[in-house]
Length: 142
Image: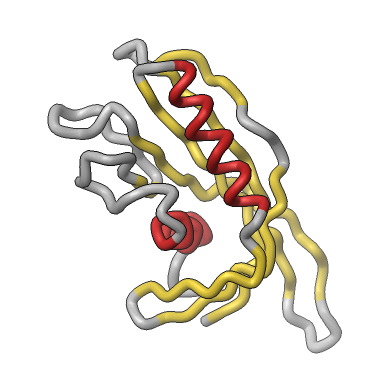
């Protein structure tokens, strides 16, 4: 794959209007780093590539993977952050056979299997509530 599973899921969540592109002020979704700098929205999220799970090989010898992806949500309000993470869970549960295009490269999200519901991570150094959702993603493409 040309793009990482986190990049593909990021684009899918932006396409589904769950989040917006980095730099915007209304729930931007970042990849691999959740910035805390001035000018970055307090209500923000980030996706990370985490450990995949091997599904073995298919007959022609290709190895199949369920790709690990983590969504982290940050909000000054515990209640609002939890609600955003829970709404993301509901939307992710419905992602099946979703087409995603990044830089003219097409991918298919075959399925998203959640391995957790919303988990609280406590607060960051600015006392913003942090939550995470973990998933395994079956992808086709490239």
